[in-house]
Length: 238
Image 1 (cartoon, one colour):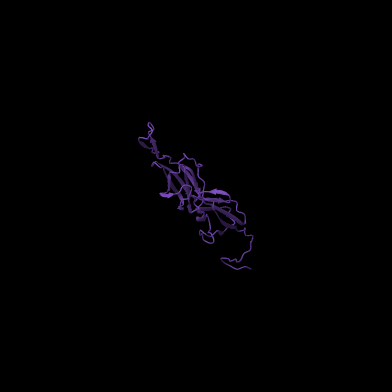
Image 2 (cartoon, helix red, strand yellow):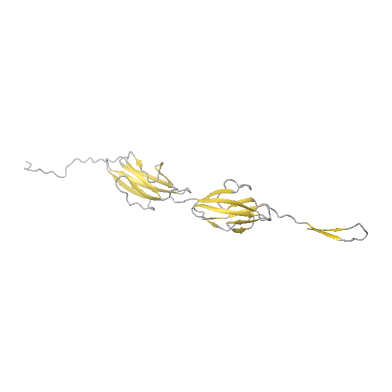
């Protein structure tokens, strides 16, 4: 800024004075807004809060961030790339698990302030890696994408253990509604004669589900008391 001052002590201005006033550069390096294209910030955005988390489904493979600076003279970068205040960043690829996004705000005077967002892309794996039973065998043999199986047990078998193993450590499973730990046996007790269905539901971290079924057939007690043959060690029947 320039201010021109004149000396009016006489009828004619004897001299002109020029004063230059320099405005100090702004030091505000904060955001007034921060938004994601997917997921919700936790905690809710506040200018003075620097660290956030957000969760997105497995189907979300990338995300954009929209930062808004408090002072229009400040600049902002997302993961090292300059972004216009109030505009979305470029797409940021997300791997399954934790992804850290850094937002750097630089004030007009060079002051820096950093915000971070940790985005958790949830695991969508609802597969079993193994499925075994305590006796007999599954038909067909287990395969990750085969959902329906059968097995047959003798009349004398009144219970059967079923052991599901999840492909992902983040998944959970139930057998007929009861929670079961990966790799641990569940006992299907009180098998009735005929058909019995074991339903295994696997739930991924992002709540994707996959259902496997085993139809267990317990055969009936034989009531046939007739002989198909009879022999003796010596002699003949009269």
